[in-house]
Length: 157
Image 1 (cartoon, rainbow, N blue to C red):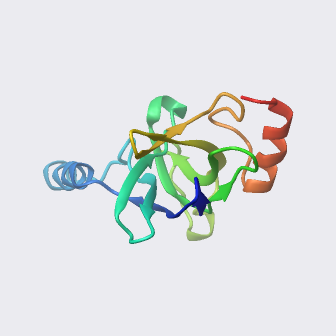
Image 2: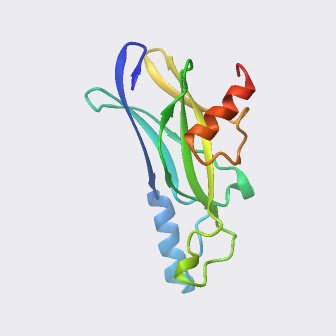
């Protein structure tokens, strides 16, 4: 993206932290079962400069169900016209939900939202902040176009 006269690269990805993986493996080894990891599956947006030097990272916040969520992935990244902001569609599920009993049911109950991330430069550094005031969290905006329409109704937040 071009922002403040400079080139930046943005990428969204899903990962599991080492601490989560260690806890998961410990539970599986000591209790002979594999429990879901609340707050597992971290979805993050990364910003680098034109030389791919890491500048900033934001872990998407999913407060639904007390944070007992599993973020599956980021489905895109789009700019917000006239604002220093990005729209990021995310898919996730609640870890307390019933597991699928059949292969064809995997994905039933997954949730799709779009979050607004504001970009700032503070002392020459890129800062990312999640702003849920307009779209809400959770919300029912599964993609960038529907979130853009919702943002227009909010005015200048």
